[in-house]
Length: 229
Image (cartoon, rainbow, N blue to C red; front, side, top):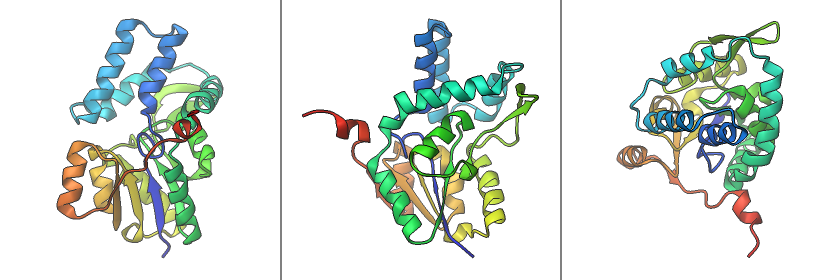
């Protein structure tokens, strides 16, 4: 069977948390109150500390999208990613993707984000949108229903999405790689044969050292590379 390389998105492929960036984007547009922004950022911080059930939170947030047109969000996110997120891609992440491709490995983006943020990021780094494994929203007649396609692609949910994708492509997860910064991704890291911690959070760094997993730091994002001296 074939091998693959799975990449987390936030703080792994890109040097920012896209959820935080999106909250600030909505606040700048006036679509989010100051209190709404504070509440959203607190949810993100609690998720990073594994103090919140992301599955229930995602289902609650998606309910608010019911009736909204999918294409409008897709268009807005594409422009936002190009302007505010793409410059934060790590050049070393591009190099890692190229290296795996040169070795004949399939490459996939595996993220808890939605396709509206993750697919434009994937295109930026040369990953086919068909190989984006993420949290998907149910759409009917071009509008959101307020439901999530189960499971939410987070924590153990990432294993479900990865296994489905791997089975369809003849990929052996035991021969595959997974790159991430987050301790929340520990279930998927333990599912693959080659877990790699990328500038990991404190708990993941401690666990990676205990298990002997590689720890890598990918330097500055391309935005920093462009900054004039």
